[in-house]
Length: 355
Ligand code: SAH
Ligand code: SF4
Image 1 (cartoon, protein in one colour):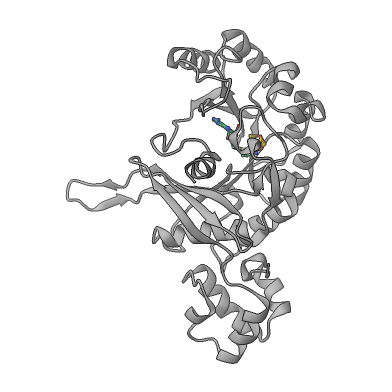
Image 2 (spheres, helix red, strand yellow):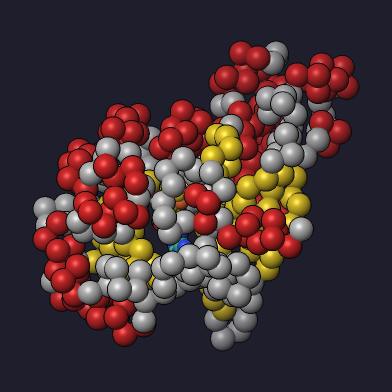
């Protein structure tokens, strides 16, 4: 596998490619024009392109499948240079708004959900990604390219705002070096210019790595996949909880640098008969007192072979109302793209089945 130009910050590329004004041009081709090959780079001398083509690829990903939902969600199956595949999701968060004359007041808003690994080592019992085991970490360029590839496919201009959530396949903090490099490349002013505030890293709770991410001071948000209020159930759902228990995660969150006005998101996957009772809601309120937290309730999304079930709407609403009544900010995540293949990890598995 050749390295990709998308593995590097502009400064790093300047140490690899001379002269530096060519790097600035190349950066424009990568992140403003979304070039997919050296041929696209019109103002770069042929000799330099030939030299670069021996060492680097431009974009390490190709789209192999796409599923479009009626709500505007698009799931992409993307292939890497070694033939392995992973997925990224294009999510429409807000519809375009028009005034009475039909003029645009507000453009539609989008979020891209990126993968960080092929498979995952954490092995959560409710997660389809975990079923396939772990294959490998994604490189920084493979993470960066998911955003470039999806923006390009949706003709989304480089200067249009986009949010990134690291909630696709894999555990981002288990591939922290490459994830941190991707965060930096996204932030590059002459690149995509996506600030830390627009990037949210979701983790199953490797507490020591939460500290390391905090020390890097990249300005990103974190989301904690909590899912349970006691260690016994959490260890059943997320085996790694034995090494990083709930308390160690809460303590790490308290140390994490966040914008004074912002809150840390706690994701709580609601599973019927497991953690959907008011007793759990009560414990959750207690657990999060003293933490600047907001809670995102997620309906468990069933798939063939899972022992777990989706909770009822009534239980979900009662849980939500209890948290709000007791002073927690809380939202229920609307499951986007339900008609295509639901939660992250499910598109890839579906294609495997059909083959
Ligand atoms: N590994 C990271 C990020 C990827 S998972 C993490 O666990 O946080 C992203 C989110 O999808 C997590 O909150 C995870 O709990 C959730 N998820 C996994 N399987 C799911 C399912 N079957 N239904 C609903 N959400 C699921
Ligand atoms: Fe990995 Fe996240 Fe799935 Fe757990 S929920 S197996 S950490 S991807």
